[in-house]
Image 1 (cartoon, rainbow, N blue to C red):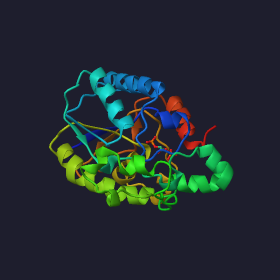
Image 2: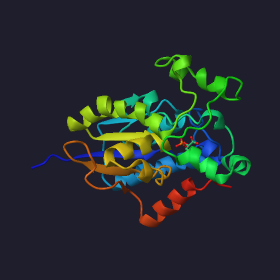
Image 3: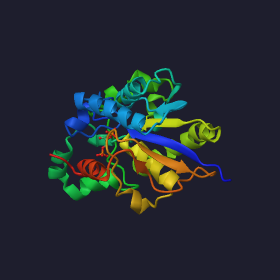
Length: 253
Ligand SMILES: O=C(O)[C@@H](COP(=O)(O)O)OP(=O)(O)O
């Protein structure tokens, strides 16, 4: 019989900067109060689906780390091994970091903003040293262990994000899945879209239309080559998923 594996993924709960509709990227925004509640709700969905884990993966950013902590406590697995990597960080939003998405659309046009947000390979303009949030990002001590200041990206598209996410999947996550470990990944919109594209072998065009909601877990059943045997499945009803996806797709209020 062909061996099948499962992997579960969750985008973090709403962050303070999601709430304010700001481009966030590598800025270390905290979870909002709603985001924390969403993390609890997410844990409940995992529990109701009877899912348990052996190991989990997250980025170096608080919004993903704190969502994972809430989930693990709530599902009664607070002591699971947690792997944290910069490779799972959100895409770097370059010079757009800290700007309001709607105001940016009013300035540059909604079409341009959607190109920056969702195109496969067109990155936002790079962040410059005099940018308000440049120092907060390059001086974040969490990044210093793995990256020199010069190695921290200045901007990233989905394509360049994938170039760092996929080696992590192949070298760290995939071997654990093959060993039969039940893996949970809690990270960000773009790093997850990179994983989805890879696992589901989506085209550069198709992935541009996918908007991942905050804190609704989804899973893949994988074949022996760790490719999805069917599209991702969310642990929420279709109407909720559709509504939450639309919220993410919109440039916002
Ligand atoms: O960086 C950001 O602003 C959001 C994604 O924003 P969009 O690409 O959906 O505009 O990332 P996340 O909240 O998943 O960490």
